[in-house]
Length: 221
Image 1 (spheres, one colour):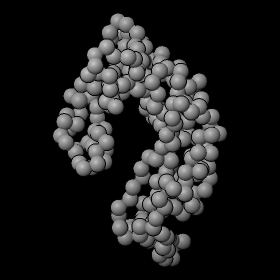
Image 2: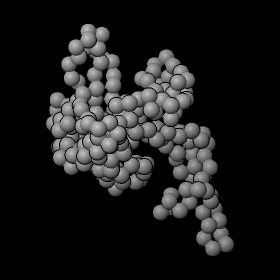
Image 3: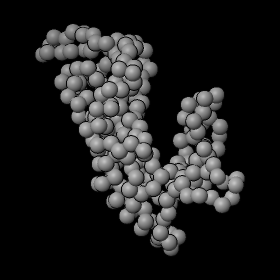
């Protein structure tokens, strides 16, 4: 409780912190149950946690008229906040929970959205292309859902930092965002900074994985 009540009173040596989503990536060719997702998350902890001490926190603690200073270590770590699923067709999400309970609802939302705007039902990706120059162009769907293993980490607050994610919470479903996911020019205009090299990039100018915006399922591979 001291951490929660006095967190705002903490000042630290070295203010640099990071709380990066470190997802469990599900291969479409492998079907995963929720238990397997949790097992894979725990198995990846030694290699992916990157737990390190980055400074000290000083706390002013008061009891009645008496006050004193206590110290705690300031730590940084990667947390497996989310499960990311990448898949080509509907009903092929490798995580069975998402495939059965989340994606059907997302599909209904997306179908309604595309039909109301375009007048026809949305299609899915990785279809064959008749043009030779388009043979390397693929389309994928993507889900970002709160990792079910978060509950285990929350129970060990003395070891792990609190997660900002919620178990089983959908944070992004491309099928529900179907029109913009299929029309990247829209977000390009909504986020003009995406046209500036390096401004919204994932990685660095040298090791660049692409821009955060526009979010799109179209990739060249």
